[in-house]
Length: 246
Image 1 (cartoon, rainbow, N blue to C red):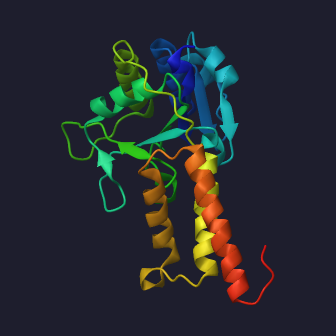
Image 2 (cartoon, one colour; image 1 turned 30 degrees about the vertical axis):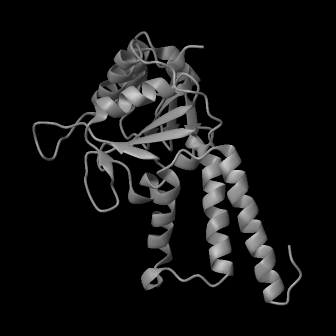
């Protein structure tokens, strides 16, 4: 199997149909065939088709999703792209090394690469779904890359890295959807035993929990064990409360 078939590029709410067409052309030229659009509006226009010259089949097959979690559900590794730095953005600004690692993983694992809106990129809530973030350094502090140009930077680096990449060992990694279920289960259990986050801010704690889960490549067996522990805690909490265990 071609490892590039395991790679999906996800565009979140692209505003300009021409950028979608140009992205399809970029993907065709770098060997990537999978494109997903999140809430794109009226995107399948003559402009998109014209700028996708020679790559119309990528537009014909592209996935359209109502939200980011559904676009990422099957992915085992999710990479976000951003040019911003900040408290909740642990960004790798040496993307070549990160992409070389992805090239090794792509042989046996499903990877999604997420690009944000032309105007303001990915929102904080969307960053929580990314397992790692990369940033392409530029000559200016506040770059303004065209969407398709940003995709080209990533896609070309991956295409080049795959020429020398050795396949990483196959691991049965949890998918993004399975990680999200784990996050929800942990949150429910902690709430059930009276856990109160620092400063009483559940939204901030949710970000911390997401960041904790995203830092490691959780295998499905690991997720099953954590679910089992959570279920046992729920049963014990119910007994302590004098309720019938679930």
